[in-house]
Image (cartoon, rainbow, N blue to C red):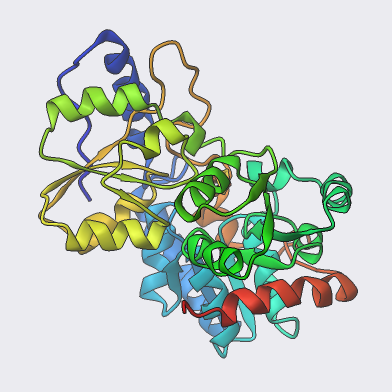
Length: 355
Ligand code: SF4
């Protein structure tokens, strides 16, 4: 895997960005202090465990490359949250091991209540989920009974249960456009940046909940512009959880799957990518001849809390994956009534077809 980090500073601020990114890239693909031999031993142990326990590994694009490659090598899947949900639902294994963040495990459990759903750690959550408590959100919805409630997949089961629709970033535009054409007004939660992007693209009447992803919110337009002066031929790929000023610089705005597709189909040989750096594993795998640059996260005067590396996704490691069956603190349970309610908007999402 090769990820190029800027080698020439356009500004002092950019130099500082580069160091932060380099520090993070130095850690990508590594697991605490494991030696290569220990990694191999753990991988072999996990492969055996998956066979013996009739389990399949379902991993998100933002997890560590070694987790992603393990999922692929063992017949599991690496994808965005929508495809993770579909894959887990349709796979015959009796246990799903979800490497991602907690809402992904909950979604898997809601869709397949008869299966056991385990996660390497239940501490892996998401700032969007945390920032949208179910009781406050329900009160908010109650204030606007005339609006159709559309929530992003990055929410708890309880928030989904309060919604009319669940969407992922890959179908958010199409769903809101569909609802707008039916004359419906939207209440959107929790990501304000994605919601604003969807509103702008569709022209729909959208009321936004005030939530954000701590990873994407750190991308800085000035840093990307500086990087563009160094790599003028590079296409800019941006996830719509990023601020509007960053989205406006994009050649392609899209979900993780859509950005990976753009990396494959655009003629450019270089890309500046504004999303979690875990995605570089798949991009580089599919486009080994192309070069990918991490979009700067800490522009002038900003503090970087995430640096293009979700701290919760990073909690998925070989060690906690290897003992996933041995513990009693990592199984996903969802209250049956809540699951029944949450299933309705999830079903709408899975059945939705662009008109
Ligand atoms: S990258 Fe952002 S949206 Fe995705 S899990 Fe992490 S905090 Fe949540």
